[in-house]
Image (cartoon, rainbow, N blue to C red):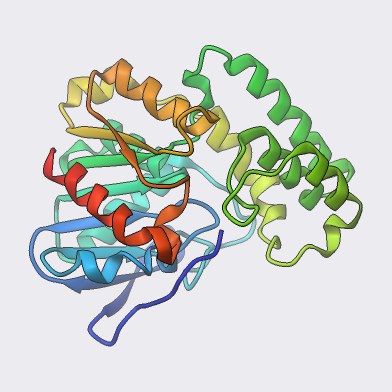
Length: 287
C-alpha cells in the first residue's frame, strides 16, 4: 500500500542508539503523547496523512523501526517482537516521555500487544488495528500450514512469488485497495520478479513473516497488567483474517471493538484518511 510523506518543518527529528542501531524518530505537536507504531514494511512516513492533524492537540511520535526508513539495521538482520517493543520504549524515553498512548496497525499492533505484556508502565493505553496474530483463530492450524508453504516458496521459487501467495492467503488490499483474486495472482506470478515496489518481499517472507504469524500474545498477562486496550478493524476487513484476529482478541480480553472506515491500510489513502482519523480519535477517547 502506498505511504505518504507530509512531515513538516515543525517536526523535530532525532535519533537514539539501541543495541547497535540508530533509530530515527520524529516528534510533532504538544500535549499528551501518542506513539504511532507502523506495520511492515512501514516506517514513519506510513502515518504521513494523520500525524500532522493528530498533533493539533497531542504530541505525536513516529519512528522508523530498525532496518527500515532512516534507521539502521545491522547484518545479519532479524525480526524479534520483543526487541521491537523494547525499541519503542527507548524511542519514547528519547523523545522525553515515560508513558504514552499508542496506536499500532498490523505488525505494529503486535508490537503493541508485546508492550502491554512486558512494558506496561510505558503504555497509557492501546488502540490496536488488525494484528496478524493468526494463532488466536480457531482455524489457526490451517493458516500456519499455508504460511509454512509460503515460507518454503520464498526459498525455492522466489520471495515475490511467495509474497503474492501471502497476499492471497491474508486478503490484504495490495491490489489498488482490493484483495487479489486467485486469477489475478496466477496472471502476475510468471513475471513476479519484475514487480515494482515489492523489494521488501525478500526480508518480509524470509525473516518477518514467521515471527509475526507465529506470535501468540499473552492475553492473560495483558489483562493482569491492567493496560487499557481497544481493538479495531476496517469495515472491509471484518470477515478477513486480520479483522477476525482483532475481534477474537477483543472478545478474549473483554475490551471494546471498533470499526474503522475502509480496509487494513486506509489511513494511508487520501480519500479515507480524514474519516479514519475521526474513528481513531473516538477510539482514543474511549480509553
